Length: 103
Image 1 (tube, rainbow, N blue to C red):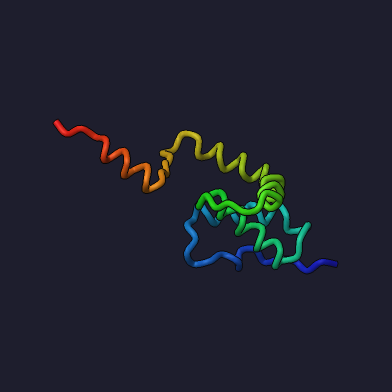
Image 2 (cartoon, rainbow, N blue to C red):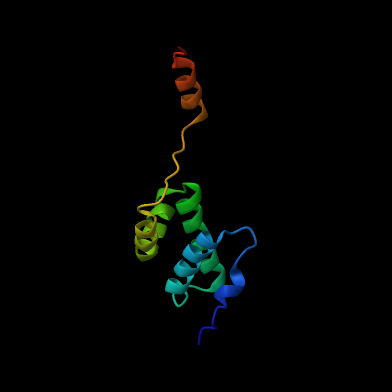
């Protein structure tokens, strides 16, 4: 029999409440499928992708996307009407600033 994972003990001090809830949901959904070490790693990859925009090899991205379908859908639905951040490359921002005309 597989040992029970104490998911609530896995929260890190730097996680916001929102990030923790998403990572916690992912781990709860898959706690029966993986050992603790792999579960924590997969959940961290998922939150890195979702919150930080990290990218990993294609095979990893596909695996995480499949595992995170339910959690992602629920999270994205909750964020639908909230303020969204837009990231631009520094070179694009500098170019846009240089092209502004000051009147």
